[in-house]
Image (cartoon, rainbow, N blue to C red; front, side, top):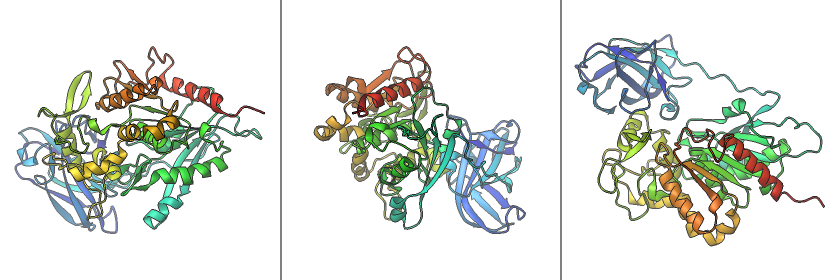
Length: 483
């Protein structure tokens, strides 16, 4: 959910032009970024306006600004890049606006953040950027939680400059006991999260392990720990650089049977991918509600080679739904994509997939899977995506992967996932069951993306408790027996 400040307007906009001035007292130097105008009908509470869960609740317009000097004014055409409609088509009523200068192009994945310049609420489409959003509080080591900030040789070689990896490490109560080494649980957050979850974490079992909360944020969005032409070799960096470093520093058992993975949503995709891509390195994964793991249903779109489906339509030509709540379809894929187009092409949820899965284009940026106006899918890009289709990789390489994955996958997803992710999961799960891996998947009735972890008859103490209990049992089962 993105929290934004807004501007006021008492009547329908008669002109599409909006003027934004940079207050000279805010900065002594020129700046740049994506200028975003937000407009909403009805008086906001206080000096903030929330975009809401439904695209179109807040109107948006945007423009890239390469150079904005202190005291200078820029004019934005709010009919150019806008959603849900050009501002000049807004109906009569009481409207409120605000301006945000997204200086680091992180708005699409995280909303208005530290360092962004914002305007006050106003009734006129002449706005002044007068405030800089404050920095987030620094993450500080505690007795049991430690910050890791590590320079990766793999990533630094790829980019030709120092690239760092971050994590939060949660230590067990007996960590200081001499001679004890620990299994490790690697957690990967969902889209928009980060490693700061370590400072809020409360392990729910007696499993005597170190919990490592990884950071998967990059300018392109969520890198999902996959090696990518655009984001770089994050899977290689994790397995070759960061994990060996952590195992030495924090007395971790450097063996596959002691390395466990879990994550939700994009983190769920990440942890299933890591287990499949490095089946001999990790000892098991517990992904929950993972992003689409079979591209025959990439949030309802068949993006496999040879498919002619439009990204905005079902196979029978109806508007494709992306979001549902309480059994009701509430957001189309097209509306989600068009709003993201306004917020920026640096790391929104859909462009995040392209930063991972797509080849690099002639302009140095990831090639889009589909045209944002027409919804037409680029078949060459879809072909390239196939290497990241987890279900396809497992099915076509089962002779190789099957023996290495047996007993190592415990996927859980609701049968009414908010983003229709169960459709892809079911394809994968049917295949796994056909190979005798009945325990690889659980499709939980009447659960969605948001309430999956609440107590259920198959996990009466909560899903996280069951996951950690299963990890503990698997660790005991697979560790070498004393001689």
